[in-house]
Image (cartoon, rainbow, N blue to C red; front, side):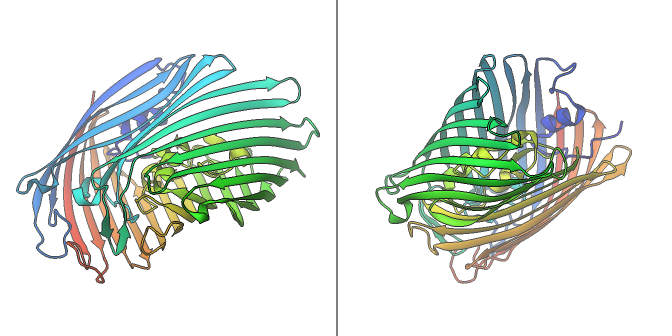
Length: 518
């Protein structure tokens, strides 16, 4: 029995990944409903259980993980759900004992064939509010992690309008809430305010006319209204936008894009979240093959003019490059909500991307969820400082994935420049940059390996994290595997502030894990 080598067998989404690699749950001979329970037991030996600069304490952590994967593929319902419940218990110190949850789910329901649909999305995970992220979630301390939950429901009406085009009217309601470490704090020299639950609503109407006015012309008329409510301090943020967008095929591979519209931003408490005016887009798209798109635009949205770029290049079923640059207004809660709404399940788990985000114009994203690439969802949720605030965010993210001779290699880079529009975060402007590379080599017989290197850097507080991981997995059977993994984490910290991890910390850990699927 050759083990799967294109994904990490210790991933919390391992069962969904195995189904995807085997073609299960995607039609064919797969059953309409499939439930796969699993249980895992990890023993983690660490030399710095509380991640402190001094007074380091070693401990043995026991991590019990139970969960299930569910798939549905019927005429009326298509969906996936992966849910994991983790209990962490220390041998010497109960300070880090806690219950954590990690899950991802999406469901698409056909209410009236070809006309009325209903979509559900959900995601839960732990984030580090500093924006530096968590190199290994199983090693994160209670003080470094905040539990997030996102649930979204969206009715969607679609119809063909004679020979003119296609209409799509959608409403989405999203709830985001948090548990643990939601109060005001200072992390790596960044003063963060409280983090509150939030509600997001969006109504979107879209009318596409492909080839109606001219065989080479795609015309798209869209209107979007968004509503965001979190803390009383921030008030209610509203955004109204209407756009007329045109894409003209100059050749089979190259098209020109031009659009014009109008927007209005409204918030009663902060002047930088108020304004209205004309919006526009201009640029071009190149399609090197049927599954790829490279697009560059210059335009004005969210009261600012800037470029926007999107690269979705698919070389094969296992090799793709995704890159995106945007300049927009969002919040920590809005980012988490938008990431869930824009997430699609891919070769390594749920990906964020396939468009310009929750507050951007989705009309120019033609490939959509069919591309199946982007930025890992868990990584993207930790980009912004977690507090009640609105940010002007300039964001570049790229992800390269390939499987050479059955071995998976993934490389991700990001650069995030966020400026507080309310002055609630100090310092108001923070940049976050980093890169991660992972390799899952096949080691022969029933063995597979893992090598991972990551780096993140924040400014102006000079927060830095370097991490390295190496592991080997053995597959006792198709449903039972074990892993031995070593992790090294060096948080270089910031000596300009006081705190338990001032000056940074170093962690060495060894994890032995067994996982059984039923």
